[in-house]
Image (tube, rainbow, N blue to C red):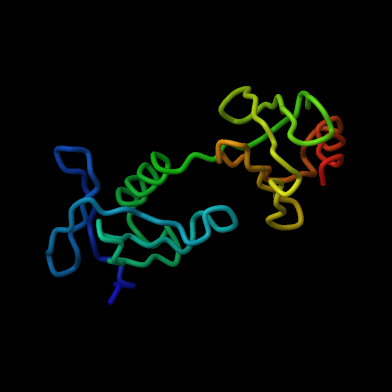
Length: 158
């Protein structure tokens, strides 16, 4: 049965793996934080699971734990999750798919191939996910804050 109690401590072992000591003092090595809703609620609904995938701790909100544990959880999530935020579309090779997109992201400029319009998914009113042919997902956090040129190019595929 998973703990809703936040009395646990996290640390790293000599191999850099995340370890959890639970409220009864039992050490669990190679634990992994997992977000239930990584896009829509990234700081809520986080489970810490053991190496077999069994839930050890459930956090309704990341803020439930002390700053040291928050830092370790965020570091671990960042090392496992890769989702660049698309900030600008510079150019698309064609308006038919597949097409090559040259874009700017929060991690720098890149180029990817969009296989089809179905690879652009709406998450909510303003948020979109674009999957390239390699399975990398690019997040558009708010379509309304993108520049006019980018919104026009994107509209051709929506």
